[in-house]
Image 1 (cartoon, rainbow, N blue to C red):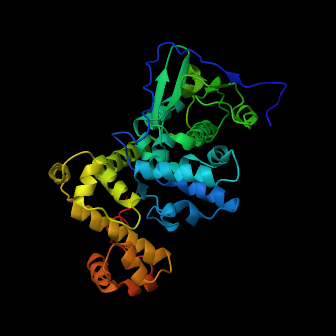
Image 2: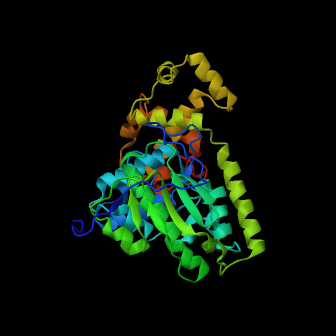
Length: 377
C-alpha cells in the first residue's frame, strides 16, 4: 500500500529546449519496427521462473524455445517481443516485475552494445553511443539523449502503444541505465528526477528508494534527468581501439537485421496468428487491404514470395514442435496444414536434410532457416 503520509508527485515538468517527442501510435507496431535481441526476455523468464512461472508458458506459441533465450544472436520481431512481454506481465505473480528485471540487467547483457558503451571515454559519450545504437539492445523504445545548458535527459519514446508492457518497459529501461552508471564509472551516479507518463503504481515507494531522487508520475514524457556535469565522468574501461571495433560490430548488426523487412515480418506475424490454419494469399491480401497481385509485387520487391514465407514459417514451427514437444508426427503434420504425415516427412527432409525422428533424437541441428539464423516470425 502507498504511504498515506506522502503521495507521489503527479504533474508535468516543462523541459526547455527539447523538441516534442511524438505521441505513440495506437495499436499496431511502428512502420519501422525492428527485430529485437532476446536478452530482456531471457532475464524476465529467469525472474518469472523464480516465482513459479515456467519459461515454456511465456514462450508458448511464439516459435522459439528456452534454449533460444541464451543465444546472443537470436532476435524476434518487434510485435512478438511486445506480445511476449505483455504475457510476462500477465503471468507474473508480482506487480513490480519490471523493477525486478531491471535490477538484474548489466551492460554485459547488452551484447556488442555493452562493449561499445563500456569502452567509451566518458559517461556522456556512452549515452550518445547508446542512443545511436539502441536497436542493438533489447528494448521496445526509441531512445534519445538530449543536453541543455544545465541538464541532460535520457528519454524513452514508445513508438506504439505498449499497453500492459509500458510500465514494465520503463522500469527496466531506466533502472538498467541508472544502475549501470556506477558499474561503468566506478563511482556513484545521481539523478535529478525521474519522470513517467503513467500513474503511480501501488509500490511507487520503491522508485524513490532505488533512484534516490524525486519521481514524477503522469508526466509529459518518460525520461530520467541528470546534471550536465554527469556527462563528463570518465569511464573505467575506456579503450579507443575496443570502442571502434565494438561500434563496427553494432553497425554490422544493424546492417544484417535491416534486411529483415518490416512488411515481410508483418506477413509472417499474421500467418503465425492464425494458429493451425495457414491462410491463402487472397485471404492474406484482404487482411492488408490490397489485392493478391499487389501483395505478390510487394513481396517480390523484397526478393521473396508468399509461398516461401509460408514454407519458412512451417519450417520454424516444425523444428520447434519436434525439438521442444513430444507431439506425434501426425499431430504436427495436421498443425502445419499437411494432409498426412508422409507429406510432412518429405517436406521436413527437404528443409533439414534429416528425417523428423532423427532430428528429434539428435536435437536441434544447424542450418534451418529461422532457427540457426536467430530470426523468428
